[in-house]
Amino acid sequence: MLNQTVRNAGIVGVGSYVPEKILTNSDLEKIVDTSDEWIRTRTGIEQRRIAEEDVFSSELSARAAMNALKDAGMQPEEVELIIVATITADMLTPSTACIVQHKIGAINAVAFDVNAACSGFIYSLSIASQFIATGQYKNALVIGAETLSKVVDWQDRNTCVLFGDGAGAVVLKATDKEYGILSMHLGADGSIGRNLTIPGLAVEHHEMEKRRPGNYRTLWMDGSEVFKFAVKIMAQATIKVLDNIGLGIDDVDMIIPHQANIRIVNGAAKLLKVSREKIFTNIEKYGNMSAASIPVALHEAVKEGKIRNDDLLVMVGFGGGLTWGSIALRWFR
Ligand code: COA
Image (cartoon, rainbow, N blue to C red; front, side, top):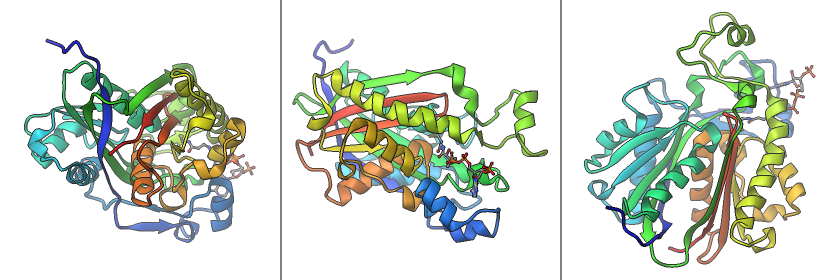
């Protein structure tokens, strides 16, 4: 039976893991017709991490999860729910979350994946917080993890320079206090979803035509269409999630956005009329890690002391689907 008291879900632990191998822009100059200068000025990216051939999203997830549990002072057996946000699952089944459950020994946890691309971590955090708000579960491990290096076409300069591998995780716990997740806003528009695709089982002629022969299962993107959508939606989703709780942009201490392109962040900052110091970015180090970008950025912001108790945070993501999502949260540890 569900508990009648609706409770907030607060982040009590945060962790991340990125592969050791670094691929720089100069390395990419040797693979495709590009330049360090083009990548830096058009995207803000300087390098990205690449998982070894036999390392998949579940392994990055498990390492990030163990770091987050350590930060929360919790043992894996205490975890009640695991959600992994990913579009680069190890397998179609079992879910990456089930593989992680087994890897870390979280024997009492329910586990499933969420596919919402770069918005996946925000979607997953929203789902987990509902389970906690209703009293169904007391805690949750929410992970964003990707091995995008395994699905990009390394001959396609339009996409291969943008993406990287990594994982971030948070532990959510119920709290009766006025902190934690205060508001959420999610959205999806499948009518424009074909701007960013990775084929699954369906073999479609028009998707085949977008790709080089023999590369049917790789990521394809209409970058400029996604770009225009992203700037607008990042600003709108930030305003909406604050509006829900009667707050405005001036009340925000820090925005942790999805890290797709520094020009998307700067464009949204301009629309929001918010100072760039209030927006955390680390895209230069990792590129776009899809569902992993926001939790990895959150972990770094916390480690760098950029987030203090009582700060109002907004985490905002957008991407494949196309989807978007934002969460407003009062930080307290
Ligand atoms: N190196 C050099 N030139 C490149 C290049 C690369 N790696 N990639 C593309 N170009 C070229 C294009 O071929 C094009 O050449 P052309 O004018 O001769 O046709 C030119 O650069 C400009 O391309 P354009 O698409 O107008 O560039 P842009 O300013 O829109 O930047 C992206 C391209 C992909 C960086 C940008 O659109 C973007 O970041 N989009 C959103 C990306 C994203 O991360 N989405 C994921 C989901 S959130």
